[in-house]
Image: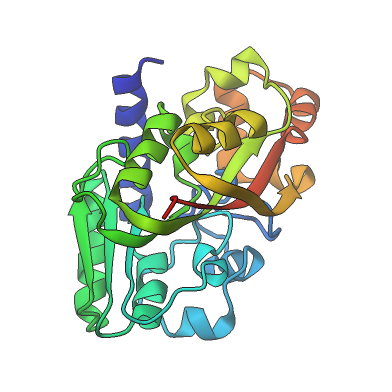
Length: 282
């Protein structure tokens, strides 16, 4: 797919997620999952707990902020301090923005960026309903951020950069908007080996955070090439293949790609969830 087609596909896919309140890039019960493997019947709270959110964090969220998306909890590992400015790349319904907002306090600020108008509408409604005043949601693409240079102390992202066609450009933009000495904390999906061509060509697999992922080594190199230093994989977990192939949306991926269940299992062991920290030189 061409870049414009990819963005259109992703935007349409996540517009449906926003309207249906259904998980897409969420886990089916394993901390490492990042696939679009869950149907609307999946308990979103259980999904979010499985990928690293505490019961207390989830209970403190505005209603509707947790869609069961993501492949980790970047706010838990980012050491967020009061008064900081945080930017969330691909903020969705706002779950990580709202958690960060509590940590930065009234003197801090959180800016959520998302390219899907339906998600932005949902996030803004959630912020209003939750009386969260130190969060702002902006329409924009993560490879061309609507944010000024040297704005943020921290950039976070949760299972979103894999969806971007030009990942190096995303990291360059993150580098640009960070203050000197600022940091990124990212949860994302990477590959441990090449996927079958049929899976790479699947639109369902792209929206499901699989076919847009790149090799782990390439991912980390893209961060370094953007100018970051002290690039560190904080944690890593393999993909829970047995859980994924039975999910409603996983079946859509199989049908769309034409892969057999056996072929899908072989491909799934090449997918990994990582949490990466890196710093802009001071």
